[in-house]
Length: 130
Image (cartoon, rainbow, N blue to C red):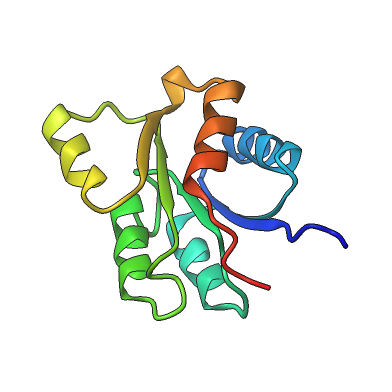
């Protein structure tokens, strides 16, 4: 019997970031869905299916990571979906604490390592579909 793959939505306006994060997620045996901005990510969340993890940049055109978090929290389907913020923006400790009240992890693109991100994917995502 084949294991159920995690479905991960990656929302980032930088193509290289989407490619790298996607590769790490695929190496963790996940099915990856990509969106190039917050508005596109919100549309992907409206499609049929459940995501087991959402990885989102904080500052993007069309809709910010904050907007995506709002969409997740107000979604009947995705309200319990873990969220990781992967940002290139310098944020204050108070803003990080504020984010961590609403998401599972906040990490910087400047500190990105494959091993750390693999750990975040494994520890934050839970298979929610059958």
